[in-house]
Length: 471
Image 1 (tube, one colour):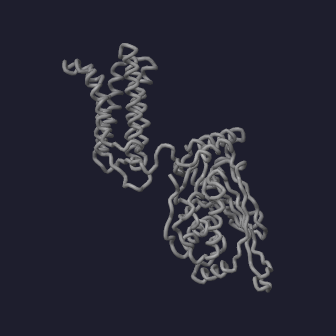
Image 2 (cartoon, helix red, strand yellow):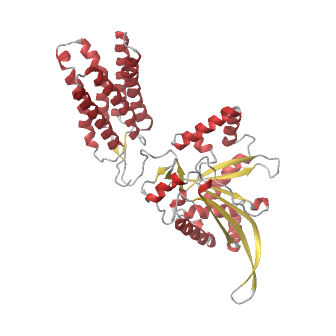
Image 3 (cartoon, rainbow, N blue to C red):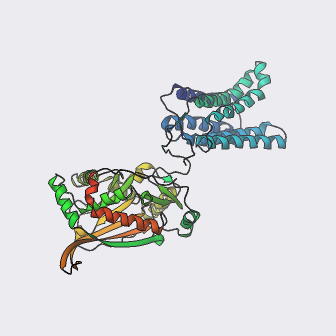
């Protein structure tokens, strides 16, 4: 992705609004002139009126609403325009060979526009002659009527001229994002960037291991926490009254992502994506520690650049928001709406949501409230007074790692000089999707994670370097 250029259009640019004005005028004139004719069958109505109107309205909508990040999606209305033009050519140009040549030219136009706007071809200036060419063809085709002052010729070509003129104006409003920054392109999701340079085996394995639960590995370890207990007491003396081992484990995990960002990937639709520096931590909590109290889920957005204090404040703010309000969380409200749907129809709704998720079409607000979409689920069995468990991953969503830690325990060990010493441990267990990284990468990550646990004081300062995941 380093060779891509990222284009954008600002809504503050006056040329953007001139383009929008031309596109809306194109749609209006097409409606007015088609209404004046008062003829045409259903196929003509769909292909020569509704299709170009939809394209000319969608083009400025994408540009104005999100031209800063999603300008490449203007290729969608451009392909609609090409389809409209191709159908028009099929009805108005004689000779099969000529029709084929026009179709080839139109498809080449759309393909080249798509490649330029998504950055695969770093030649923005090529857009100007590319868009001028079809405008020249329209004027050439109607040249006789226009030169003769025929109003029918003007009515026939004016909507297309306005549409193409608007695209030409917009070419002068296109700018390049600064080099080194990443911006979405085709194949990315709203919650992740597609990793495109994986080895062939890593790209094929998701098609062989389809389900997340059938692709899991398990890891367990014991962490000596005498120094962590001292660190926790120190943080509580500094005013972080509820600071505990959960915050240390989570802060160390987030900090380890600075060196091993591959653990912040996820798999969806048989493709691997990276969340980069958006670490989405999910946690199940109870408003009260009673068997009758219902569970709810919080989601906290962390960053590899966060210190232990940052992690504590973000997590505690989310916990307090749930525990100190009588209202349900966004997750509870969404689940409550789903429960209003009858069982048979609910199965269809869940299937539809899975299908939309497969193709990366779930709305952002659903991704935000879903506990099945995130970077890490970490649960405390220690707060329940039991040992950690291996928790399954969810086949719905894209959660790649589920961790659990148990209650503190003491162990008597023999030191090097032969004396008996008592040490304090916490056992941790992780369930991991093996398709996001290989075993060597997982092993390197957890060794680094354990080293950080032995020196929690490094979490008081921001990291010196945050590595970016591969392209």
